[in-house]
Amino acid sequence: MSDLAAEKRAVRGVPLPVVAVALAVAATLLGDSMLYAVMPSQPEAWALSLPAVGILLSANRLVRLVTNSVVAVIFQRLGQRGPFIAALLLSVVVTLCYGWSTAFGLLLAARMVWGFCWSTLRLGGFWTVLSEAGDHNRGLLMGAYSAIVRMGSVGGVLVGAALTDLFGHRLTLTLFAAVMAGTAVAWVLTSRRPALAARPAQRESERTDLRVVLTDRRLLVTCGAILVTGLVFSGLVTASLGFYLKEHFGQQIAILGMALGVTTATGILLGSQWLPLSPLFGYLSDRFGRVIVISAGFATGAAWLVVLAATDSIWLILAAVLSAFVASTSLTVTLHATAGDLAPPERRNAVLSAYATFLDLGSALGPLIGLSFASLAALQGLYSGAAVLLVVAALSFWLVFRGGPSQVAHSDPNETQPTETW
Image (cartoon, rainbow, N blue to C red):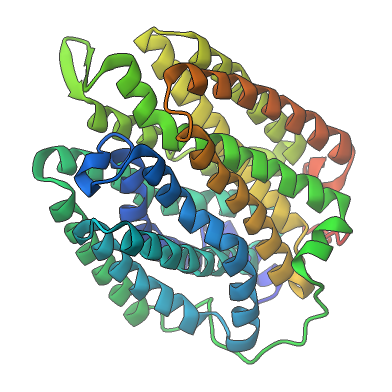
């Protein structure tokens, strides 16, 4: 599809292929997201130690350091549709393993298979968005896609945590697997003219992932920024929040005259990171430039992490967690759009797989670091260090991108700007 055709469809709203693929991907996140809410606060349910939980929550991200590039090659040679369907179905099997196994080896294998699945699903989703978007609305469509996908994460942490407190993790994960299977079948049957169309391999003049990054300073700093974002928010804060709350308040948290189980409270707070704000931040980055939104996101996240490290007040903790997750949302969607700015079709597989690998590296290191120091004082020190890292990332991004195309807002929403290929 040409950029002009994509823009005409986008004027009428979010294109149907973007909505359809986002809903399919969202369902696959139910089981994975639930683990981040439940495992750190209930490791005994799987007969695991806390460091073992950290390994499991990082394993799927570590394996993606390899599988992102593998999937890019598979897509180029086989097309996207077949591998995408296989990843949807494998996700169901993996979720059942989470629910019915307590063997660390099998759980580790399941997490690694999920890593391959997510590499496939994420690259397929990005391809769909970038194929449908024009330069004037790339941030908006990436934000809309992210908002829909993260509905699955919200369901996983909120519904998953609540159902686990009521019925246990096995029944909950079995239910999630059934929902995922139904969604996968529905997408396959209804995607008669999919954006992820199978097609012969393209002879693209793409370089290896690492070389693409190292020879493009704007892509390098974008990858570095998403690495820091993944490390601090998706990794450290998300994985350690249940432990942080339990160490502060015990197994129950009293608030407004009610007593919430720490697992339920963790699920509610984790769910807040996926409030549907992505389209707003995507639009703002299209309108006012990526640099402004990204710099504000890093500054906000740093400030509230310092508060999280220093306070014992439940109200300040709530404010800090919510604000940090809003900052994470703004950074993630805007950095995704920036990567799209730097990924013209002739090198899209290489750029997106390299970018995703940096994100996964940060996200994988976060749980390993945060859950390796099993004390509240050490975790608070890590939060303070993470705030400093966010400030450094903000300065680096601003220095490289100031005055560049990703800082320019398009005055005419119907006018297509040429894609830059730095």
